[in-house]
Length: 172
Ligand code: X6L
Ligand code: MG
Ligand code: MG
Image (cartoon, protein in one colour):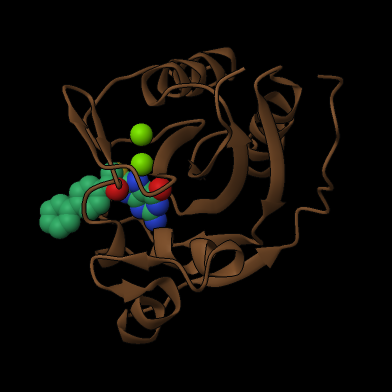
């Protein structure tokens, strides 16, 4: 078994039953034989960024441990998106579920379709607000997540709910 890495994923949904889809994505991660879920942020209701004329999002972040390589973890994330009915249409358009790899240990990856740390992570309050729940002290682009949160505009972001999720240990 390869070494375990702590990774952080961002989740987002603005179509259909947003909370249910985020919970289903968390369940799918937890059920994966090579992924353990260690912590989940609160759920946040966030205004749409980038393309403003679409419904509000629910966003969350999750901390996992995995021995999957970054590319394999991406494939797992895309598979979970597909299983929850994500259809890729318009760029930055509405989606049932979005699962982004934000951090993969301290690794820097820059390959076609896979850039880690996720680019412009620290400019987006909808990413940093949930990430600050689970990794406040981790440095991104020279500042801690908590420090980025303090300088970002979080107006319009509301705590929607705690997920009430708890870790499930799968047999190794
Ligand atoms: C200028 C042009 C400034 C484009 C920003 C920002 C584009 C974010 C795309 C941008 C720009 C994105 C979510 C979202 C999206 C989400 C919320 C994206 C991709 N995903 N808004 N917008 N939550 N609240 O998960 O992140 S589309
Ligand atoms: Mg995204
Ligand atoms: Mg994505």
